[in-house]
Image (tube, rainbow, N blue to C red):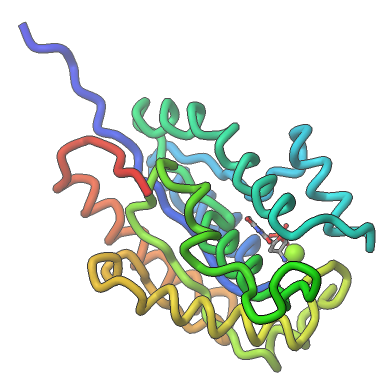
Length: 227
Ligand code: NYM
Ligand code: MG
């Protein structure tokens, strides 16, 4: 007798610069998936509701200094503590939307200016920034909301938090580009959407990426990949 087989859910990461519209698109997407009869859940990173998330929130909303490496590892720990629940949710057949994931983790840390006291030449490198996330579940697709700096700055709330400064955002933009082109094996993982259109236009393009992810999962071997 064969055991009934539940196809796993898709793991879909939504990435982009601050104010690219990620949270708006995630909410719309969640509703669209659910109303299409696809079980789905939203997971935001950083998850500010957990103990590590509380520390991260304090860091982001204050000017309290914290060692760049330490805060980087805290962002990663915030993902690791969600790992088991991400995996069991996916394996139970529920699709997960990630509002930011390891890619934000890598580029925001690597974009920081070097600390003179440690090494005046070397900011945190991309391989160093990626290493603590190795082993986390790998998304079936990374939908990247691409927005110009001018459009991002016009949107409400820009400048409220640490990192929301033009110079750093420009660095982040370049590093996201590097990451997307970095490894030809990973190239297929990225689905770049022009996020400068209306909310509805962007949502349509995002939806195409989701259908692609669902197709990949259907054709896959049922296992969740690892970073
Ligand atoms: N951020 C986010 C990081 O620096 N590292 C990470 O690992 C993640 C997930 O936190 N400016 C940064 C990017 C954002 C900030 O995110 C807060 P949000 O989506 O605005 O709550
Ligand atoms: Mg923000």
